[in-house]
Image 1 (spheres, rainbow, N blue to C red):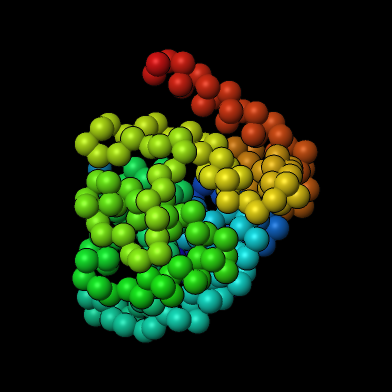
Image 2: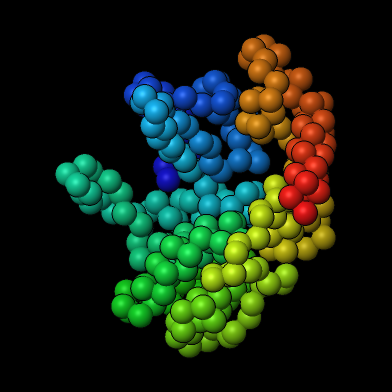
Length: 252
């Protein structure tokens, strides 16, 4: 996780160390990244492949995206990890990050739920502060859903003021085999969190019309032709939707 203002710098540093990406650095503009908060890079070393996910946001296009990232980094502190200087999130933002990240992956990552359980039982987090921050951002449901799943799966005590509420549709959680995630799961989650009809329509329009790095990987174009990615975006959405349906049909 890096500050959005340092995304291009972090991307360039990874590329300089032999990591590859599906698109060139010029794609990392605010307009092209509006629908994106992460990208994957990889490095091959013989038969081994090393993957790195570069993150610069928490949720796609939330109403308070810029303010939430500014608040997160304002509370981060400098530490050392294995001798390397790093930033560590404040405990409340660490909990929110885990809650949001687990939700974005449909709560299929057992490790994130275990981490949340540990934060809760060790008493390392002010959950009233978490609830207040979530309320300011419109993330109350994410807090209730994540902690409720921890409670059902791990017996995690619910903080005072947090009621038991499981997400709908309820995801399969360990030890049941996980659901196969579709590319639309995050859009469905974003629509559930959108505060009103206007925000939902804005979100749908953005998903359909604003290009992302995936179009740049699918159809590599030079920077001078970048405007073509806007009319190509609906075709990219249709392509990924068709591929997802075919994969689901064959796996079913």
